[in-house]
Length: 301
Image 1 (cartoon, rainbow, N blue to C red):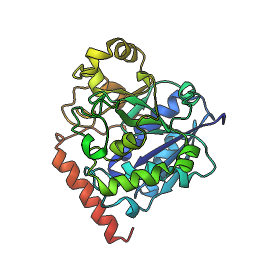
Image 2: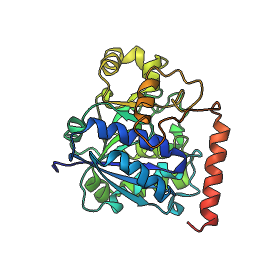
Image 3: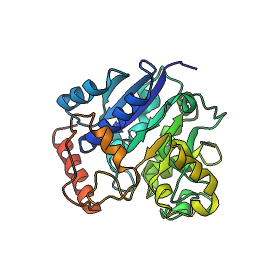
Image 4: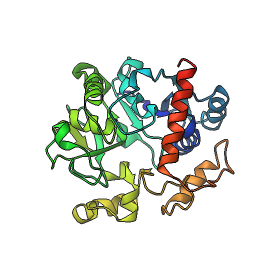
């Protein structure tokens, strides 16, 4: 296995601060020279890329790839940012790599990634952590498990932290299968639903500490009734904190118990003094993403 840990992330301009925080936490927790990060992005300006890079390249090898979002437009899914679908392009974008760790931008890394990188997942097509809110397909996320052809009791994972065996994805045509599904079925949770469907029966469950989600902290999930010891152990020693809905630190009024850590790492970014000024509204986020998408189309992206 490659001694360098390869990580991929994806973002659009609306998540540049979150991306910077995640990269800052990664840079502070990894030994210098051990981690190479590829950021797939849609329209993050050169100025912002340079400013973010200046804060993290003391420890990380950082590369940027600007993505044409048109192949993932008009999919039958929730109104997610196009950037959330870019990871499906990783097998083609990084043809020389056999494995990568994918991280969402709403995370903070608390530990070196060596153990995660070296984790053996056998012939599984993805390694992931069970979802906190919906540990099964028929969970509170209202995934359309019947339309997807999933059993209601199918174990369901969160896609914010993934081990992706890129060579297996190329061999099995995983990305193409996900796109076909997203074009034909309404996926409430976007490509998370699609990947859970394609990987059903062929995914490896990772220790919970690698994706400790908001509902784990708040105790508002059925997982506490079924996986209490595992969740308690993860909270005591989290390797990656994933600020899932609700209560993200950049939302005014958030009560997440580890907001302090997110703002601590914000202090190492180009926006150390930034603070939220208005309460989050889901419709406002959807409108922002729609406005950005239309602006990209006008530019011919």
